[in-house]
Image (tube, rainbow, N blue to C red; front, side, top):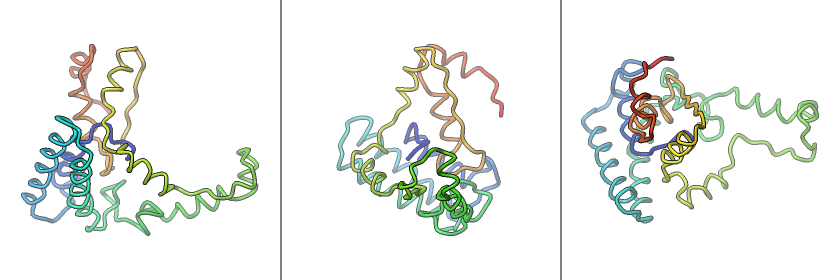
Length: 199
């Protein structure tokens, strides 16, 4: 899943974004202790099956459990995973909770738009997501691989990094991203952590 740089912080931040007053007052009307227990279990299993020792079968089991217990729980409330202040409109998988996606696809498929963008008119299969490609990444455990160490290496090479997330985004939220950024080990981390947070 794009935007997931460090999986463990995303698991814990799902609880924070939905059940704590982070960007908005809590948005889920559930037994918060129940969800917190699920988060703690996800963190424990993630550490055991991925960080301490990579075990593909246990990683898959952890992912399946955590997605069904955390993500599905959020989805059951009908909220938009890209904006916790809004309900999900339309189909989540095809339109990502936004009816405007239909208009965007229609616009991008217009011959005049394709011509303007230099797209071969024969390539008329634009879609917002390719589920077969998504499944291939998933089968290769791509979604389970943390990439924060690669970011540390880029920073050590003086490559400037921009991390951006929406204030109300639940799926790839600012709380989890802030957590891994503040914990990232690199030569400039002390100065970075001491920098005032700003929008």
